[in-house]
Image (cartoon, rainbow, N blue to C red; front, top):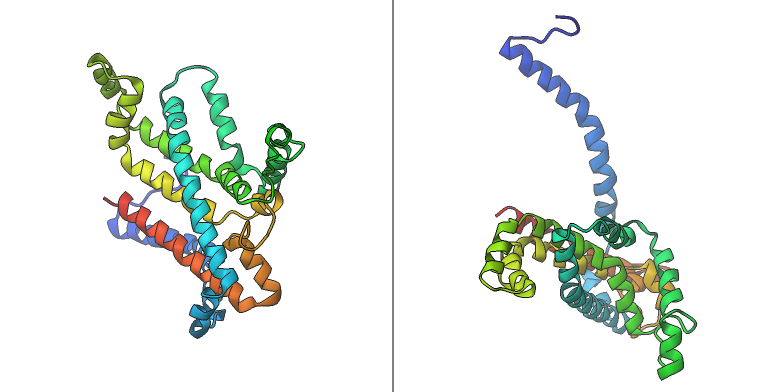
Length: 273
C-alpha cells in the first residue's frame, strides 16, 4: 500500500492520536482565548460593590425595563406571526418557498444599520407605509417605542422562524395526514399536533429571539433614536454611558451578559434532555 503506513499497534495508534490532539490544541486554545479574554476583562474591570447603585439609577433602570418590555413584545409577535410562516416553510413544496426562506433569513446577515435605514424607508414619514399612516392619521412611527419594537422584530423574528421551521421539519408529516383524515383543519393540526411535538425547538427559537431583541443596537439607534425613557434600550444606554460613566456602562454590560448566559444555560439544559 502506497502512502503513509497506518500502525497496527494499539499503542502506536494512541500515540498518533495524542500527537494529533496536541497539534490541534494550539489553534483551539487561541480560538477560545479570543472569546474568553474579552469576557474576563469585562468582569475584572467592574466595581462589583457599586453594581446595585448603578443598576438602580433612573436612566439605567428605565433602559432595562424598556429592553425587557420591547423584547417580550417582539417574542409575542414572533410567536403569533412567525409560527404560521415557519409551518408553511416546513411543509410547503411550492418552488417559491426557497425564495421566501431566503428573504426571511436576510436580516440574519444584513448589517444592522442597513436594516435601520430600510425601516426608515418603510415606516418613516415619507416611507412606503409610514407616509400613508402620517397622511391618514398623523401617526409618526420613527423615534417612538413602536419603532424600537419594529426594529427588534426585523432582526429577531428570523431567529425564531428558522428555529421553529427546523423543529417542525423534524415532526413526521404522517401525523399531519392522520390528523387531516380525522377532520382536523391545518390550523388545528399545527396547534394540537405539530407544535407540541416540536415544543423544544419552539422554546429555543423564542429564547434566541428574545435574547437577540434584547441586544439589538444598530437598527434601533438608526430607526428609533436614543431617547431616554422612550427609545433608549439597554445597549443604547451602554453606548451613552461609555462617555460619561464607564462604570455604569460596565454594570449594564455585565447584567446583559448574565441574562444571555442564563438564556444559553436554559437552552443547553433543554437540549440535553
